[in-house]
Image (cartoon, rainbow, N blue to C red; front, side):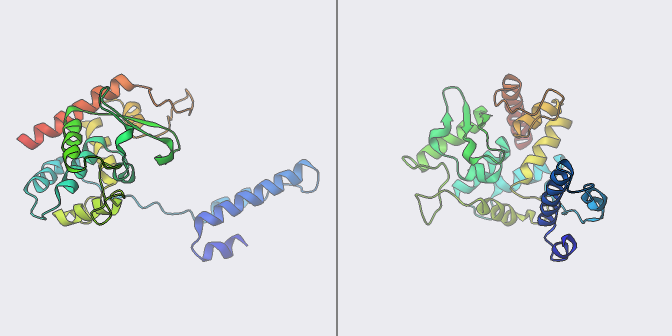
Length: 245
């Protein structure tokens, strides 16, 4: 049965089916209706789903991207350019930026609280805002004053920007196959670790990844918040320095 599902290329479904069968057999063992869970024997024989990583630039390619964004030979809309720069500064997931709402920003405390309903891991996430990011937000106020979303769809101003707009913009800047909207996360992780020398645990928490340490996997949105504020400012200043060189 499992091999028949696997032949269709439904690798994730195959794994789930194996888990269901395993649960049934383990229950059968517990009540004396089965001798053992034989799915353990075939786990290694099943094809695992291949993970396709999003294209991402390397740290040394940051100047090239910033130059292309500044020159704007692709004639991107001002909103789109601001969105790409804010995505680079905050390295949130593209859909989290595209659907950002004004009500989620606390500019007094320089924080963006992304609600759990918009997060992949289903918990609130705190994004410290650097002065450079706040400057972008202030510019957006003049563009979209009174709207629900920071970034709106040009054809439907009451809807938020499509995340595909960000990827299309990157391709139009000349980075097709080399970079993607999601790739800013990997780019920030690598650069902050190698160039700014921040601890991986702090970076991963800002990426909204669950902790991997022995302290447990409970997510605390404020953990390392002071260090994360400093890191986000350092990251923004690092990009500024490159852009002005």
